[in-house]
Length: 517
Image (cartoon, rainbow, N blue to C red; front, top):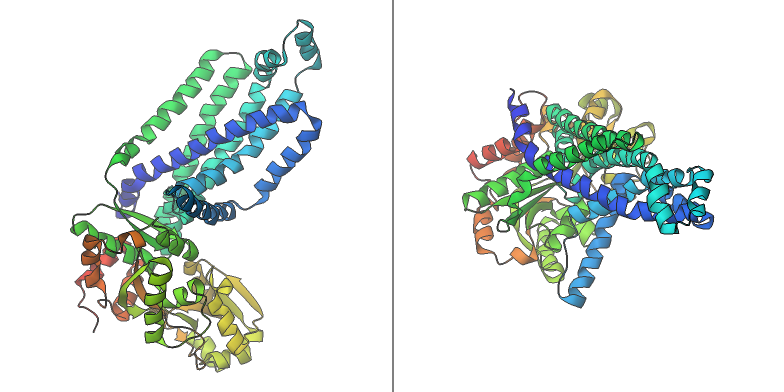
């Protein structure tokens, strides 16, 4: 068995357990909401249309967007609860994922429930009325038993949708089979991507077949089949959830990471130092930029690495650029004052946005700076990462240079570099510490107007851990210890096409290098 496949299997029990718990909880909650609504909608024509229309409307919202929208809402409610009752609740991970997936499961169950109940033969309904059944007796003894196979068909659809959509819960901090997919896409570990997809598909198919057994048993009035299907579901869920039996262990440190290779490496670097200090560590990876900082400030994660320019423009909403030292000093003071967040210090390197081109293309067009790029932009296509075009940094650069590109396309970072190599993009918003810049001999365009702020990589510590001696002593030696050359080399070992290292191996390589000068 290959090392990558072995690594994927090693993570499977934890990822699968959380995926099953999340999917099952959402489906059960969806059933609890949908079935009463289906009964009410079947009874009332006036209620039927708005209920089905609302459920359909929710289904049109992209699942990833729905997951992301719940996080800031729950975070606000948690803050309100803390102010009013003295206790908040976790707004990261399981809860926003559960609520979003529950809403996604409602439509097929609701629609099939209404169709099943209203589709009962009118003669049978009249017979039930004729023998003097109450509405409740008629519902439980006649309508629901007859509608059960149709309802189960909706449950099967909801189950498959929910299990598939649960892979998208990773960016809001929920462990799932999506961890394989998101991390694998970023690091081009196709074994991880395929493994995550295969396990998710196998889980959905197994659940669908067991629910199909229940549906067949209900349709044919064969109780044994229905019981066998339910028993299989319960037994399978119980076995999958066994790894979560250790949830009662003492709380561990939670190390966060955004969704690109450098972040995975630095998260592993910090986690390793904490584990060497005797602490247990949980990793929350693939977080969006806004989610990561909010989670830290709220105490949902304990530590992660961010970049001074990102914090300056996105968190503090500062449009100016007073220089590298002033930005770092201002951040340290303001984040502590405003949110209680501790800036432990810079790791010693900068990972700035940097516009890059293939050397042959840059030479042919005579482009060496962003000022030159502005002249040629109407003929060119910009490739960016998924966030850049909505960030203040892009607005600042565009405002300074008026970059009127022929087209702008957003890519997941790995595919952004491939788009540049393949000619689908003429220039990209690269990252200055990315090893692929040197490996691909890309030309980095200068910024004569200083529109792009500095991006020192800094360790951020949550307010609740700001005085934690073990955490601070374990991580403080990392401050100033990593040069940009070392970070580029580590990133390249994870991002290169062949002989890839894992983020943990790249982190170990960083620790063996001499400190940054």
